Image 1 (cartoon, rainbow, N blue to C red):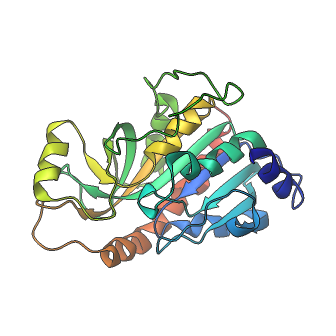
Image 2: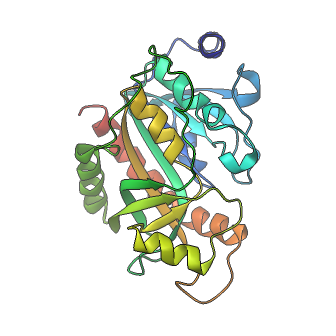
Length: 270
């Protein structure tokens, strides 16, 4: 199925992307900055799962950011939508087969670290997989990667340093933190957030980790950036809702777009 998907995309463009981007909830704006772009709805690609979450456009955008050929996933599929981990990372594996060498994943996340605040950009330094699932379970396809891939530097240190350097130059406040992936779709309880804090999580979200596992399995370097859209349950007063996530994401998205616009050409040079 991977080869069928790649062949279908090749019918639309001969572009060979070097950098892939995955854009999270309400964070799809950078796709509009892609020049010479070709847009392929996920529904038109064999085997590609359809995004059902609000704020995910569900299309692949290919073209150039600066001089760099890119493939942009404008929306993703989450495990809470009822797909298997292997199906959820199908798009990442297609990007790898298209030639992507570096993957930048973005997401909307809740802040467990109380020094964060809504609207901040946090560079992911590591993750904790609380999904109790991995896209690598089952027979290993040696064409994709080894049976036991190393995850010591799941989020490439050089890419993280570059992201913070570019953000500083643009006057964007950033931090680094550990992302905890929760299955959802319900938000975490205050007790669950206390547990996540105890085991070292600074952020809570419902995505990203399967994608990074699949990418690292294929030898693709990864950079993760979270947009803090809310304080996690029990960290601040008030109830949580997806509308708030989308609203804060929309307000913060121009800053994320500015960062990615400057960052992607430099990422391709590392």
